[in-house]
Image (cartoon, rainbow, N blue to C red; front, top):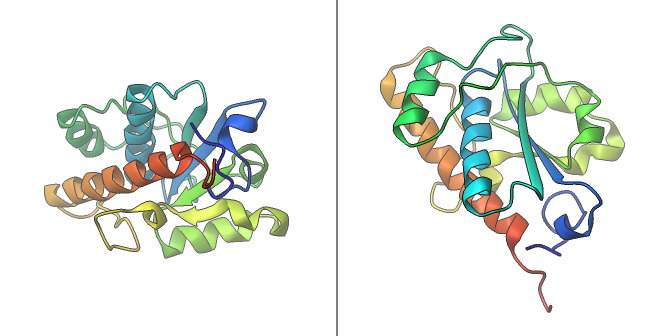
Length: 177
């Protein structure tokens, strides 16, 4: 596991007295961020790292607070082995930048909205999920809400790639150790 300081928070994962916390953020917290939450949660479980790294999700807007993820997001995720059914949408809070080590947004609009809430002393915690992509070159995870079925598959493709890169970044040994 990680003693690496370049995981985005400046804090080594293994040298904490609590789990390292990652928050996935999109606009309404019903499509992209719950998908990223579910994908990363399963990757952590599969890697045996659930006790060391915690994941949650939120939205920059409160349109869907308390709602389950979009049925289409759940259906597409389920086909790939991810269960999003237990999640409920919530709104991003300024306190989240204190409570989470990494706040990963899906696109530039989410980044701008999150930056408005983020204390200057915590700006290093705010990044895009796609910063961790290995195979895809997209700088954003596009919102599939108003599109067709392929949009939800594209979200999963991008999220799986970025979450794999994130897992590698958090689990990589520190250089020179």
